[in-house]
Image (cartoon, rainbow, N blue to C red):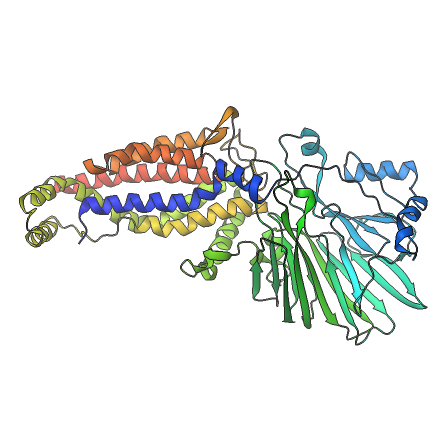
Length: 593
């Protein structure tokens, strides 16, 4: 049987250990270590689109002919594209077609008829050190100099170096209505024409791709995404995310990460294969879900090196199948990991949002239940936000809902712990009296509990453990949900992004674990933690925890996202109010007796 002070001690210890596990990888020190040794942040290079029309010639002559055959569009068109793309430097050659929908701006070159740029119009880079980029630059999810998207191979022959002539007239196109716009590219191989048609439409991140050839039936056809996916978050304040590869039959999904250059293959009736960065997703999709051979090849992305120690791992993916007709239809998703957007395709894209990877799978079978909890938290946040239009207020409402659900257990636990505090002198007397006779001590203590109407086994820490999965899910959601990227709140008017740590100003030096950003909310939370501990911890043996826990919480939470700190601060405030109410009720009951 656990003694009263042991219950309290174990509760505090459990909270302490859980916080260490949850917060270890969010500290500023780990963030610095991660960026410098594992996932170096790249230095920004201004995006320039330069493509070349090259005839089928010998490889050694290709560079020279490429320079000789450059054909730039006229100055007016360059300026028009500059305004559309909102870039500081844009150079586009005449073999590049630009199409703009309400969601994205895509550049397709005639060489291979491949996608060389995919800009997300609704999302811009956040970079506190580069104001020009912060203000002007739209996120492009295709990395520089690492290959292109929508590559094509037929019967094992790679067609990415072939010249597919664009059959349209306009090379800068804007989709203005709900009609589909088709861009057609044609390559003639010994009189046998191969066509690639790209079909765009407003209000979607879906790009349809058709491959046409007269004798395509029975031939192996492979669509590739050879460029990987760009990481949009280069700001130091943002926690890095290792890219993840996925494939699925449309219902069940597989997720994995590689830490070196390697190759993963899979065969079966799969519908898609894709890659995610922190906030964006690229996938090759075949709605038919025919028997397919998938390939996922990891590679080191050179331009993400900030020092010479390491390179960031990215992925090249491909989807290969045998053509059943002379026209094979695929489509490509290139867009954000937006929950509502991913759900509408009904292909389990949303399974990519919160996968449990590596060793974490073995913790209480967390890969089976945690993604569902995290998705439920995100769903609830989105629904509440649709009502109040403010994610800060949404977090408050979420905390209230959790408090209401757990209130009966929390009240019972607080009531039991309060009564245990009241009889601590009697318990201590029994321990001193029977310190040499544990059996007698336990018998008399059980009699005392029965007399006082206390259940010593009342799990005082159970409500905390029941809330922990929600807390951890919220921790992950606030880090990874693109819906909260750049979200502001009237609750904290000085905070401009609830997914990032709060920062009033930067300190001139870096404090280990704490970091160098000064924030107000973690200080408020630490003060509330002190008063909460002062109210609940009465055991002299645990007195040090009253002072240690607030400092510990302040140091760790200073590098948490401000939305998460807001949630935990509210938890402390509500717990103090509930404790005051509970103590008054117990006192009233005791007085009545």
